[in-house]
Structure formats: C-alpha cells, structure tokens
Length: 235
Image (cartoon, rainbow, N blue to C red; front, side, top):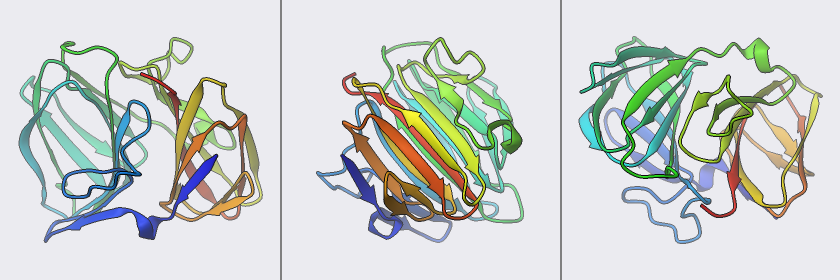
C-alpha cells in the first residue's frame, strides 16, 4: 500500500518569518489520518527567513533530525554545542533527559529544511548533538544511510531507534530498487525533482506512506533528490 501525499495537501502554518508544511499532525494541524508512522512522529518542511529562527526552547525524549536543503541553520544548546549546518548537511539532536537549544538562520537568504522527529527506543538517555557533511556524489544513483540506529550503518549519524534515513540523488531517467523487509514500513519524501514510485508519480516536496510493500522502485522523471525513512512496524 502506497499512500501518496501531494505537497498541496500537507498541513500548513505561516507567520512573518516561518512558512511551514506538515506531513503529519503537528501543533495546530490535527489530521487523524496523518498521525505519524511507527516511531516517526514529525516531518516538517520549513522555510525560515534571514535573521530569524527558533529561540531557546526545550525538548525531552525525542530524536530530532535537521536536513538542510538550502541556506544554513545555526544550532546552539545549553550543553555548549554550537554549529552551522549548510545545505546538504545533516544535524542530529537526541533530546534524551532534556536539552535546551535554539536554531537561527543568520544568512542572507531564506533557509529551507526538513525537521524530522522520532520517538527514541528508550527514555531518559543523555542528551547529545552532532552534525555531518554528506557530499551528493557519495550517494549518486543509490541509497546511502544518512542517519541510523542500526549497527550495519556505522558511517551514518546515530539515533536511538531501529530506523534508517536513506538519501539518494538520481539523474533524469535513472532507476533504483530497494527491498523492504516484511516487518518494515517507510515514509518517502521527494526533496527535489519528480519521481515515479512503483508506478505513481510524486512531485517535489510530496510524501508517500509505504506499508506492506516488498520493494520500492524509483525512476527519476527529472534530476531528483529523495529521502526514505525505513521504519519498524511496531516500536
């Protein structure tokens, strides 16, 4: 079963500095049919204006992934971590027993990013933050593990959950096939471009819930960037 969620059907929020779209119920957007997938609770598509951002605030018991698509985001937290994450790079924050942090766009252009939250496999873990650079050439034409809690992907940023975020860049006409375990499900988002997914077309920034499928088969209808979160059925 593949449930396609076109970009225009996503939840939305906007003010003078933030333009957000929600793949799942979040804040004031409540859609009972879109309440997350297994441990994956939040996938927000944010555009943050220059000089603006999220002031210091707290989280607990959440794995938070920030995937920067354009521009930069600056992270600072009460543990003295500081870091500038540019487009193409990823940061991970395990909120664990509690962390205070802020995120700002100090650049001259709007920053666009995905912010993705997962329920951790255990509560009360020590909070932590890290970031990593990923070159597009390193996962051109095939899926690469970017973030994972599975031991077979030691090169990926670590999260406390039996889940893996894969990324790929496909040139127009390229195809890719990925097997899905019988006890797994997933959520796929087209970060850029347009793809054919198992016979259905997905446009830019659209999502797709994938359940009870043996494999994914992607064909790029134009130059395309895709993210796929492989998730347990139960958590």
